[in-house]
Length: 390
Image (cartoon, rainbow, N blue to C red; front, side, top):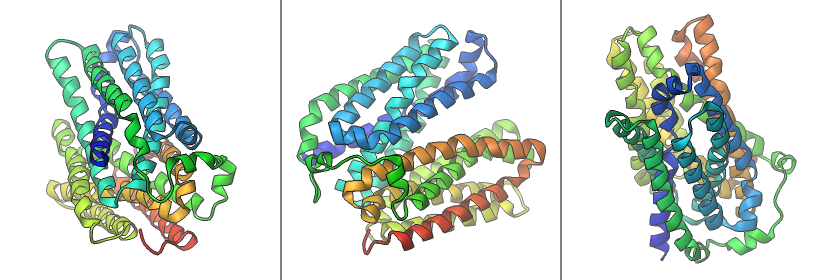
């Protein structure tokens, strides 16, 4: 039964990734139909992000009241409804309406599932589960591309993913009894009885601000690389735009393959060591991008940054119960997720302003500064909330 539940969680993580890259893949076909500027994708993205941040902050309260299984079920059902809503929408303002449950569903399930895995499974499963997310995020654009090239339109792409989410919703409904059978030291019913923490109480916990800033910096670095990697190759390194778009995929290859490999490395290294290893690889990748040289040098840099990013997100989450205790881990993971989405929303556009007004060549320097802050915050976390074993 435990293995069956783990398989369901793996499916859930693939499902989490499927919708994440749909908007970017579909938007070129969507915005002319709605008669809005191409920049309006940012409005939809911000609404989704706002909902995700809000539900992440409420994940502790929701999980204590409903349990992880029910939170996952209702969240995936909400996401499925939003995707199907997108598939039948004929106006931009309705897209904005459906973006609300889209974001609310994504945040709560992400925080709740990550905490459940951190509490009940070994670090290797966290790495492999986030590898599954990468597979889902990679498959999403292919599904959308299939719909578009087949002449079925972007609506069909959202519909296909929506139906997949509906199937998962049904599986989660029938799997609800399984979530009560797995426990690790503290049962879910005991966790429910504890009082949910407020944001003010959370930030007063030693190490909480540090882990929030660490997560903020990690996601800022990851998303800035994703958004501006191609532009850096084109505008600074002189790579053709269509070639740069394809070459930038080496980052995703690095992060997805890296997480698959990290699952094995965690059998030898603890979470703290894995995070430090990731930071070293990112630093090496940024250094490679700073070196003057031919195109392959920058590609090696992007690949190393992807490989370095691979262990950091899952290992920070997995270490949270060890740093702060199982009774407070859901609250901490919730605010970590919220911090991550804030970093995702703010830092890539900030670099865009710098690139527009100064030069896109500053990308490696920008990444290096963000990495330095992340390293300082992580080391401060280790001092303020140390653990003897991860």
